[in-house]
Image (cartoon, rainbow, N blue to C red; front, side, top):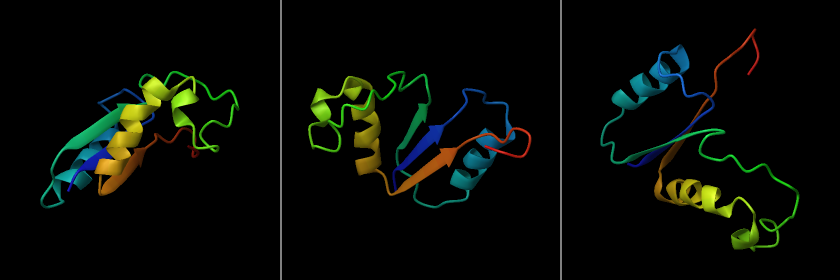
Length: 90
């Protein structure tokens, strides 16, 4: 089973990161793990061009950043979103 992790912070010394790694360690038959850190791996901010909605993802200004993430989603059986909690809220 391939897994994609989307992290909202690049800190590896955090309970959020460690919780995700622990969860994955308890799963059996783990294949490839794709890991992306936002915004580093997706620096393009949506400008509302609607290319994605129209089915023209290639025309999006951030397509070169988004393509590897979409490919990882397609290849994965599990997607984990890791976001730290600050003052009781994401």
